[in-house]
Image 1 (cartoon, rainbow, N blue to C red):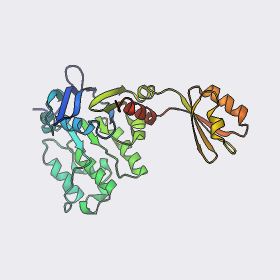
Image 2: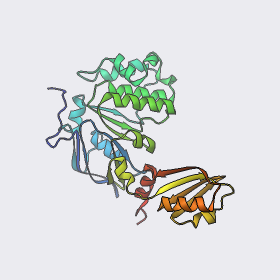
Image 3: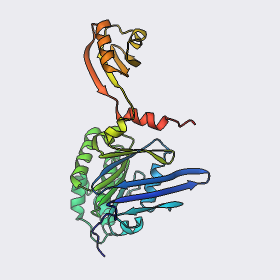
Length: 303
């Protein structure tokens, strides 16, 4: 038996087909199809209750689907995990409080046939200097990095991460993702930090009400919302006058800072400069992933 990961016959590292799961009358996952290629970094996004966690649970073999199937490198989830192909970092995974960081990682390593050296996992996760510290003494961010070391130590081909950088400060989050990119592994991560998906994901999968409603690059997802934003400093801005400018669909004013949401930013900018000659520090930006997220996850949700 070998640990070497081979993609499924269709070239997938992960293949979910028609995945379904209900809890009573609640259809948590209602037919999810997902293909992840080897080496891809995929962000799984969606509002609370979208079915992300249940999908991840079925991918990891923690919950049996009511219908459909999940394969990881051509194997059933539990088989792939038993073969050391999958490392998972779950947000609510408990740590043994009286055990040190190094001992925690060593315990996980002992469950696998061919783990990486514990020291290497600690170094890769940035917790080598915490090796002798008991988990009860760790901060929230240090706990997350310890969980990351525990996910890495089996030397997996696929990493599944649930809110991996929660409780981390900005610098630690940046270091975490720098480490992630060095691994070269296939990664599926769920996050509420949309800027992380925008900066680090090769691809975004957006779920709502148990279904995949958008799947593509960040640029593809952002293309679901049109228009641009014009931001400027304006002396004594008048919201009504600014809102009446051609090409403007919405106005936000905070002190002297004005943000115009525009269907036609060129037309709006010309009109702004003509009517508000004091305008300065002007910036024009495309709509963000957050804008697309909000549009796609609220569109039709009340039906």
